[in-house]
Image (cartoon, rainbow over all chains, first blue to last red; front, side):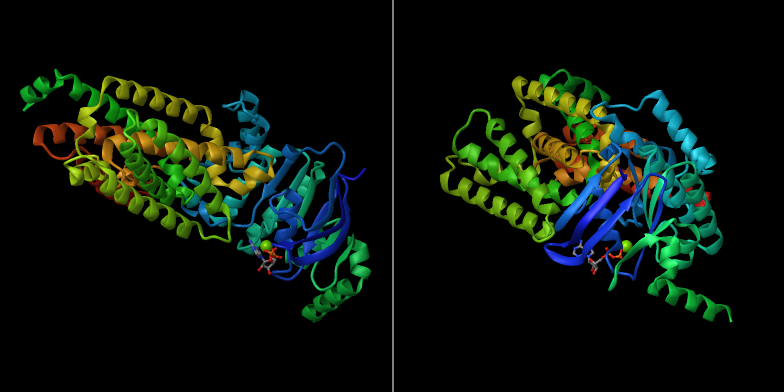
Length: 236
Length: 281
Ligand SMILES: Nc1ncnc2c1ncn2[C@@H]1O[C@H](COP(=O)(O)OP(=O)(O)O)[C@@H](O)[C@H]1O
Ligand SMILES: [Mg+2]
């Protein structure tokens, strides 16, 4: 059984449909890239998968015993957080919150988990720094560490590299690649098709035409061929 | 001057005022950061006006204990405001402006038509600005205040981590399975309780200041949620103590003196923030 099965899903706001007839499945260990134009509904799809936005029709079926509190999420940059006084440590451990239920305080093992994830993301020395004073790349690592505290299974990332410079972008991609190698399923939004083709195992393209398939199938498809042609054009 | 203070301290009403003042200042500062950052500060304002309306109705009905009416009305309004605030269709701000100004107008109207008091303007003024009511608290009111304040502090400590998670990033909290809506509801209820409590101290027009200034001041200097929360609580208590003592010694109105102290503290914190921030860079 797949981790997530999406059947005839249509999404949008207030019954205004943005995307319809989505069908795809995400298996454990997949690296799914969602690509498409700006405004094509990528973020909306992710929010619908997370239950933040009500779907208009269709079904989202979780499998493999996936629980709501076993999902990690890295949102698209959010304005509210801009002037928030919070240290890196406080933010990372807040990823454990969903597991707490009504328990008021974090356990030792949760604190250790936060430390481990900070180490994994290479931000241990930033632990006491203020989030809003960090660079864009550092902030994304903090949010990724928080997402890792929330899950061992699935990560949903909404444009994790937007606004980062090329070097930091590559670092971020390789961090995510390593996490996927360790067995975490990754669902990532990107408008960088080159990166999608390089790292993903599966590709979902939404927009005027919807495509879902493995990376190789994508490269065989019309959209993929068009992309390859552009790449070659660029290299000339 | 000190003699005068010692003399005053022998009166129970002065001691009551200090105890109640400190507790209310402590409570009202705790959720300040959340209110400011969640853009909820307008809710505080709206609620205080609703509470004013409820108090005038209670006064007209001659209720011996107006808390029976004021508390539930304010809590229900808090829940309603939170709901409309989340609803994208009705602009939250407009809804709040409507409710709060409406409540203010009705409250004054009702007081005017039905009041038997000879000193109407005085009554209204003291409800709006808190003037002397804190010095006329009965022992029963003091106990109610102490119990509610302790409840607020305990709730805040128990839910501190959840309040942080929901305030910092509600979408993430919801997406990963935290019951954010339930905690938002809790926050709204606690805010309502705090506002009703704080009406005693500073009156309904100045409550927002009591809630927001300590948080803004602390945010100038500190950069972690914990430190901001702790410091704003300490600052709020100090300002309340200073304000009450000064008002007793100088005969100024309690509420405005406390808020003035908060404003001065804010200015000082801005200065400190500018200096240390400059050093850091
Ligand atoms: N909260 C909202 N209410 C109504 N429409 C929205 C909302 N958020 C986004 N939209 C619209 O939905 C469409 C898809 O947006 P989005 O999912 O953010 O696109 P993407 O992430 O692919 O750039 C856009 O046309 C946008 O204007
Ligand atoms: Mg988007």
